[in-house]
Amino acid sequence: MYTLLISIVIGLFVAMLFVNLYFRAKVLKLYGVLVRNKVEFGAAHIFNRQKLETEILPRYPQFRNEIEGFIRHMRYTIRMATVLILLITAFGAILMYFR
Image 1 (cartoon, one colour):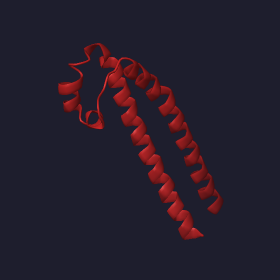
Image 2: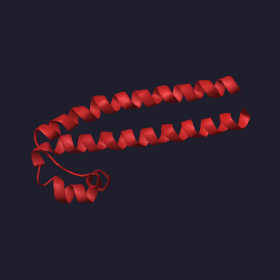
Image 3: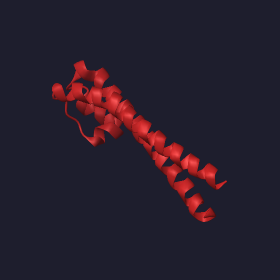
């Protein structure tokens, strides 16, 4: 049981590594396009769709696909990282209990 839990925690750390690589590949590529074209928006726009549509998308209509892709990938990455951190914490707590 203990070895199984250790291997699960190690697997989750490897999954965190792949989330990091996903972040670098997808998000930074789109981020580079947005930075080169001086498209600016804040974290509030990432998490509030209505604010994004009223303030940012009308100013940069030619970069709509890049902005939406960046935000979609950011949300997905944040969601995946949160789930993985919660799982690592839960299995770590279980390991501390059984040790």
